[in-house]
Amino acid sequence: MTSSGLGTSGIRDNHHRGSIGNFLKEKILQDSDLSFVSAYFTIYAYAALKDQLDQVNHLRFLFGEPQFIQSLDPDKTEKKAFRIENDALALENKLQQKRVARECADWLKAKAEIRSIIKPGFLHGKMYHMDNNGVQEAIVGSSNFTVRGLGLGASGNNIELNLEVDSARDRKDLKNWFDEVWNDTDLVEDVKSEVLNYLSLLYQNHSPEFVYFKTLFHVFEDYLSEAERGGLLNEKTGFFESDVWDMLYEFQKDGVKGAINKILKHHGCIIADSVGLGKTFEALAIIKYFELLNGRVLVLCPKKLEDNWKVYRENDTRNPLLRDRFAFTVLAHTDLGRDAYETHNWGNYDLVVIDESHNFRNNAGGKVQEDGTRKTTRYEFLMERVLQTGVNTRVLLLSATPVNNSLKDLRNQFLLITQNQDMAFHESLGIYSIAQAMKNAQT
Image 1: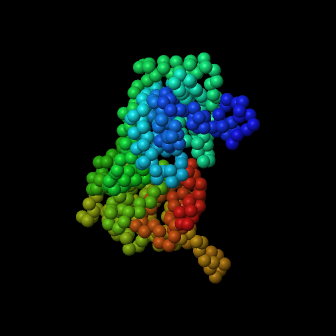
Image 2: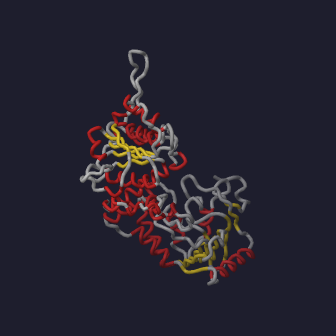
Image 3: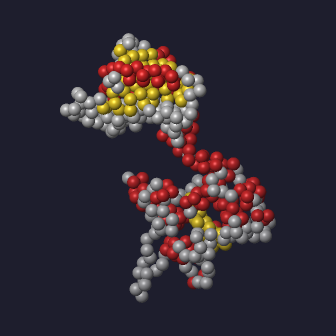
C-alpha cells in the first residue's frame, strides 16, 4: 500500500510507505556494484529480484551472523542466519526450488563474493548499497534479504523500518564503513564455498533411498536428539547389566530406551509394534528398569496370557530371566473389580503395564442395573481405583492393534496415561486437547 506522503518520505516499511524490494528494483541497474549486509539470504528473494540482479557487475554479501549454515532444515536451528531455501512461500513456489536454487548458485558463482562475521551477535544492522558507475544509492534498516523482509510477497510481508540514505556524504561513508568491515580479517571470513555446497544439496538429484532416510530423520529428529543426550533414563541403576537387556535386539533396545524416556516425561507410553516383534520382552525390560528404582509394578493382561507373564517371576526352568528376580504382580483384566480382590491395594503401583490395551478402548459408562445402581466397568475401575488413587502411577500400554474402529479407541487408551486429563499434553507436546487432535486426524 502507499500513502500520500510516500513521495516525500525516505522510509520504506513494506506497509504504507513503500517496500524496500521496490526500492532495490528501481536502484539496481546495469553493471551495478552491490554491497549488502543481512542476517538472512534466501533463494526466493534472489528469484524475486532476478531480472535486476542478473544484470549487475558484482555483489559483495556480508552475513551478520557466523551460524549461517546450521542444518538442512533451517527452521530448526537456534540461530537461523542462513535461511537459503525456506521463505514461507506457497507450494507452487516450493515446487520450483530445484530450478531456483540452481539459478541462484550459478549467479553467485559468477558474480558474488560472500563473507560472514566471525563473532556471534556482533553485527545486527542491514544495509543495501548500490554503486552505479559512481552514482551511489543506499538504504539501511531492519529488512533481511528474504521475500517478506523485502516486502515482495503476495501477502504476509514483514512491517520493517528502513530509511533511504539521501546524503551523498552518508552514502559514501556507508560504503567506506562496509569496506572496512569487509576487509578486516579479524572480523570476517570467506564462506562462499560453504554457501555453494549447501545450495548444491537443494538442486542435486537424490535417490529414493536418500529421500526415505531424510524423511525418517525429520520425523524422528526430536527423538534422535533426545536419545543422543541420553534423555531422562538413569544409567546408574545397573539396568544395562540385566539379563533381559542383554537378550534384546538392537532395535528393541532403542525402543525400550525411547519408551522409558516417554514414560518418565509424559507419564506413559504405548508400544504398538506388530505381532512377533517382541513387545513382551521390551515390556519386561521396562519393568526391570522401574523395579531397579524400587517401583511396584502391576501387569494387567487377558486371562489366557497370565501364565505367559507369571513364568518370568517364578523359580522355573522355563524362566530365562531367573537372575533378574522379577517381582511384579500379574492380574487379569477380568480381575478388575472382582470381590475376591476387595482388599487388594490397587492404588499402590508405580507402573501399570496393560497388555492387549485395546481391550480398554471403550470408556462408556456401565449400564444401570435393576436396583437402580450403575455397574462400574473395568475401564472405570482401572481409571478410578488403580490410576487415579494412591501413588503417582505411570502407564505402559501394549497393543499390536490399538485402533479397531476409530481413533476414539486410541484416545481412550491415551486417557489412561493422562488419568482422564484431556489437556495433559498441552505444555509438553503442544497438544491442547487429545480428543480434538484425534478428531482432526480422523477427518
